[in-house]
Image (cartoon, rainbow, N blue to C red; front, side):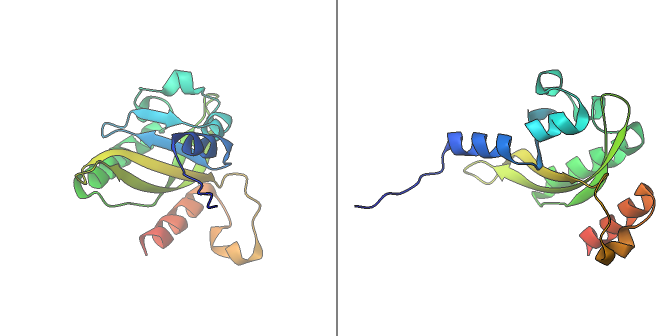
Length: 151
């Protein structure tokens, strides 16, 4: 007797909500389609406040909004993942340094329909000895991790 575990929508939902990673799904205009528990804990915004709203109106700092728009345009135009490092602003006005992986989700014809992003909050991460390049202020971390992601 063979038992096959089928990964369906319920599995994806439970995995998305139980992971410690930030999971945020965006449409082509930057509107938030999914905002998991980790995103809520990190930002202080509830999913009910942000779902269907432009990420730039909530979590993207003013000084990074143009770059965020450029990033979205690139991913939707090319269908290519583009690892990123940037800040998220919190409901209380704070800033978190986040490293992001992302991948467009496509329909049966290969057309992107959503951008799935997963992130790790680096803000309070204790430095390790091998992370000497990431020591110092958050802007230095941002520049170095961006350079590494590009490589």
